[in-house]
Length: 229
Image (cartoon, rainbow, N blue to C red; front, side):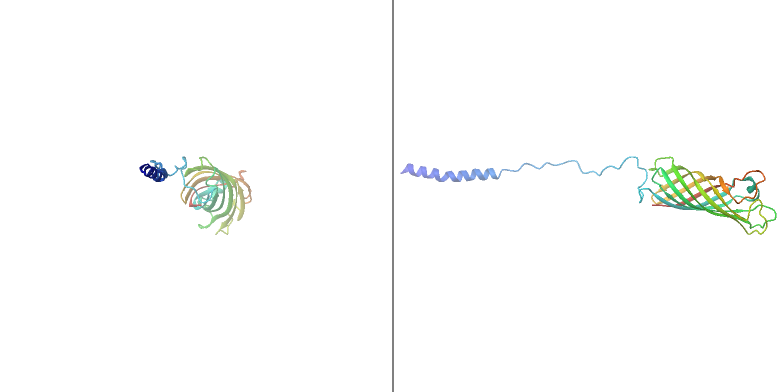
């Protein structure tokens, strides 16, 4: 009788012990989470970039300004004084080594000759197209450059009924502009300063030259300001 009670008690306790052992295995704690002590850092900017990116990948600038302009021909300089020059330019390629430039050009030079009214002047209007080569990597705000191209100017004598020898009343001059200067771009601001010489290769403004010099080329020193896209 006593033996039967002991055996029954053992058999009844066995499933309970097995269940408690299984529960303890299922409730085993999970491994601890790995913590990262280093905080997130923003990627570093690319070294060497000195100017902000423009809205257009190649860079586009519009500018206008003025300065001083005159002629290279001695006979013309004997009767015409240096005067004002103005212009408006579009530059494609401010963010590259090589750029293309198109411009409207204007000049007004007073006559300094006997027999002509004081307000007599030689007025010119024209256009030019040129290639511009930067001398520094285009990432820099300050950019010295060289420029060469072709231009056309139409000149007319204003406020003078008398003969304006050695010049005709009007005429056209085709020339090769050669310039050197520097530009500066910061954010949207664009500024340009240059000196330009433009020897002519075809013209019908000058009457027959007395000294054999038929080059009615021009020079100009101008400053422009505008904006860049």
